[in-house]
Image 1 (cartoon, rainbow over the protein chains, first blue to last red):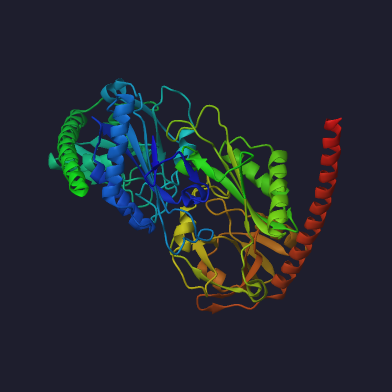
Image 2: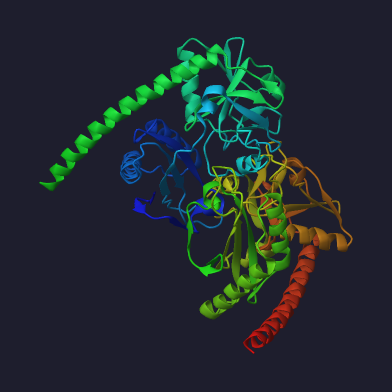
Amino acid sequence: MILINGESKEHIEISDRGFQYGDGLFETIEIRDGQAVFLERHLQRLKSGCQRLYIPFPDSELLSSEAGELCRRWVSDTHSVRAVLKVIVTRGSGGRGYRQPDVIQPTRVLSLHPYPDYPEIYREQGIVARFCVTRLGLNPALAGIKHLNRLEQVMARAEWNDPAIQEGLMLDVNDHVIEGTMTNLFYIKNNSLYTSVLTQSGVAGIMRGIIMTISADHGLSVIEHAFTKDELLSADDAFVCNSIIGIWPIKQIETTYFSVSPITKNIKIQLDRFINDECIAAGGRAIAESTNSRRFRRGTQQ
Amino acid sequence: MILINGESKEHIEISDRGFQYGDGLFETIEIRDGQAVFLERHLQRLKSGCQRLYIPFPDSELLSSEAGELCRRWVSDTHSVRAVLKVIVTRGSGGRGYRQPDVIQPTRVLSLHPYPDYPEIYREQGIVARFCVTRLGLNPALAGIKHLNRLEQVMARAEWNDPAIQEGLMLDVNDHVIEGTMTNLFYIKNNSLYTSVLTQSGVAGIMRGIIMTISADHGLSVIEHAFTKDELLSADDAFVCNSIIGIWPIKQIETTYFSVSPITKNIKIQLDRFINDECIAAGGRAIAESTNSRRFRRGTQQ
């Protein structure tokens, strides 16, 4: 189920700079109860990524309305209220080689996919992680944003096939642990919450930002810093997160075992509450918007 | 004029990993006298890039034959014997997120484009270059290969609009000068030829390799090393190269001026001879292949 610039299509021009150079950005968003969770935050990050890459940001309301249309179709066609929405924005076609065109007409692609069938046990009892050999390059110009240049993650994820390992942790070329292939990483030590600095590499995840905020709001010291494998392995416990999985505690990294600390348990509880509140609020907004939209349509028909 | 997996099409599935993650490689090849120049070398580099990324390499003969078919169509449709051939190979569709599919069915895209109308004066009298602010990240896993993750080059090329500047030179995050946005870089100092080491970043261009070989064959010391802006600016002269432009001497980098040294002039002459010899040889091979192919067709028709 795909909308490309508002039209139901499944193909894109090969001249699109997203295909030619990975010249674009994306968001991966949970659909719960038929609603896009944290949609405004995702669109805000997409907007700020577009600003970093000088790509004109498509209208937020247009993106929200297309997301809503796809969700309604999804619920109606699949009778499922859960899914994953991927939003891609590229610099569109044109330009000469790497040089961007004088007038940029961005391409927007919204697609819905089945919610992945991760076992519930990952959330409850934790996952096994390994360290990847593939390193994250350093690049301040691209660090933090969720752009389409993802070969490092593809190469890292190709390092293992063992289904007993759920995530690979990536270091940068300076031996700092940065994140998982598809997640951000936190650890707990002496009642403080630590996560890596993302000014040189990595993706500043929406879920990471929310966890930092709610943890600080609940009195926890939240510290962004550069840390090594050894620092991570000496933590009280650790977890990974993203917008689709929420939080997965890490029960094992290679030969080091962790048990879920009361702090992590509490962060999970606070996060679940926060997401539920957001869903209820978004549901309310959706009902209001749908009512307004009906009023508006009636209005334009007169 | 495009062939996607052998079919005349202009669109690709949005699920293609080339679009989703920049998960692929490309080659940009000069078409001269209706023939792909250095085609075998380009396909060899593409093959070695595919090996680095664990993408099954499409059959070389298939790629050559599709390139030949496109060239024949181009000459027949446009009455021009000069063009640019772009060959893209991606990991195809499928897999789960960054994880590659168990069975990889690569996508191959061959497209022909008009030869760019660069003024002849660039070749003869040289170009003006600047240093870009955007840095190249360090990543040994991806260094040297011509992959589809090209946001750094796009960002660097977006830094200037002044048509008086033809190329931007990029440094890595360690302040070493690596290459141009679309070219490799050489400089001459004390009768030796220097170029950057490409083990941490950069693209090992086909033209770069040829220039290194023919220079060494003509008794020049060819030195790959890490160098700074100041070392480059104190050179006797410098030039950039790629498969489409050949060699462009640099006459000015910001406020430093160069004049084309006899060594660079000689390298240009040797390179032109080498390319001409290659074209004559490739033309001969093409005639032979075409004859074989006719014989073969006659054979199968019997």
